[in-house]
Image 1: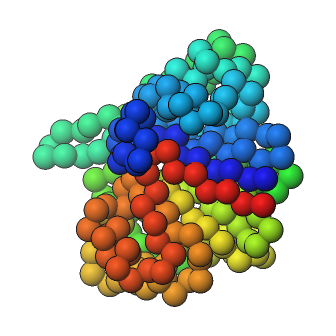
Image 2: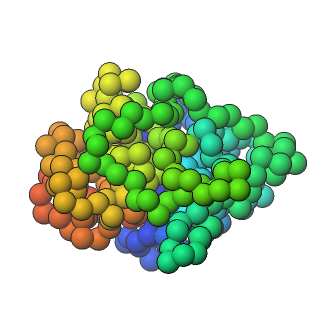
Amino acid sequence: MLRITTLIENSPGEHHGLATEHGISFCIEKDGHIVIFDTGQSGAFLDNAPKLNINLSGAGHVILSHGHYDHSGGFRALCSAAGGFTLITGEGFFVPKYAFRNGAYDFLGNDFDEAFLSERGITSVTASAPAKEILPGIHVLSGFPRIHTEEKINPRFVLEKDGAFVPDSFDDEILLAVETGEGLAVLLGCSHPGMRNMLDAVKERLGRPILAVLGGTHLVEAKGTGLEKSLEYLQNSGILFVGMSHCTGKDVMDRLEAVCPGFFRNVTGSSLFFG
């Protein structure tokens, strides 16, 4: 049995006792293994877990999709609640991230560094292979070719490197793909490298169809041809469960709900079950 649960997300679901926040965190329970994908912006996901009958203390792997606070902000709290896990991040995860806004730079990055991991004795692995099976049927993918040129990164996102600010190409972003009997369930953080670029890489590298896709797409900032092609991609992809949320944006989700047969609003507390 495979269960994928959204521990926290921007929006509430039927369970009104759960906290919500701008961020995302998933728990994957498969064949006795527990994997956490992203940790939201705070430790609130930890309070939600027991209310969903989920015990995170036995998590063996923690994957952080990229170095933005709304995906890694709950990691410090997790370290006080669980231990013995392996942390997986992408190349350049610890490079400070900012957003440029009206002449100022807003810090958007992580509130911990590699020294913190060393002090806590946390095993950390950098995902560098195109696809790596970390557990039977659970794969981490990184390094996504930028094939769909309409998928553009907002230039407001920058990195601080060697005392200068440079465009953030989000080379650190990684995703998780989980095997089910009928295809792959894919978990996305924000899809800064481009949702279509990332999903096409999944199909090419793992050679299996995508059954479900959950998480953020950053279509909230997409416009024109790029947005229309992304909507068409999801509408005609044959993906049975399309649970886009977080940075997808309300207007885009409204459009997806109208045209995409497999779309559902993936919110805090949502679970998908696969045999």
